[in-house]
Length: 162
Image (cartoon, rainbow, N blue to C red; front, side, top):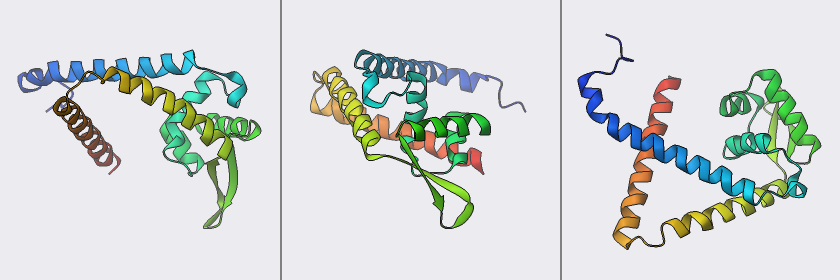
C-alpha cells in the first residue's frame, strides 16, 4: 500500500496538519522578520542566509562537518566552504577531534554565542508580547501542545534515521 497517498483516514487529520504547517510558516516568517529588522552587519558580519544556516547548527554544536551537512542540507563542499567562512569571520572555532584525527570539531566562539543570544533575546521578548493576553491556563495549554509537537517530531526523526 502506498503510504504517500491521502486516505480518508488521513484526510480527517488534514485540517490539523494544515494549521500546524501554517503556524510553522508564520513563526519562521516572524523570526526572519525580527532578525532582519534588528540586523546589524557589524555584530558578526555574517550574511543573512549564512546566519540562518548558523542557527540551524547552533543547537548541535560542538559538532563535525557531517552534522553541519545534515542540519543545513548542504553538500560536503558547501558545508566546508560555510565552515571555513565562519572560521574566517570569527564565528566558528575548529579543533582536531582527539578521538578521531581525521575529524574536526566545530564550535561557536564566545563572541558569536553572545551575538546570537542577543538576537534570540529580541525574538523571545517579541514572542512573549504575542502571548501577553493569554490566561495562565491558555499559556500552559500552548506550552504543553508545543512540547508534544516537538516530542512527536523528534520521535519521527529518530524513526527515520533507523
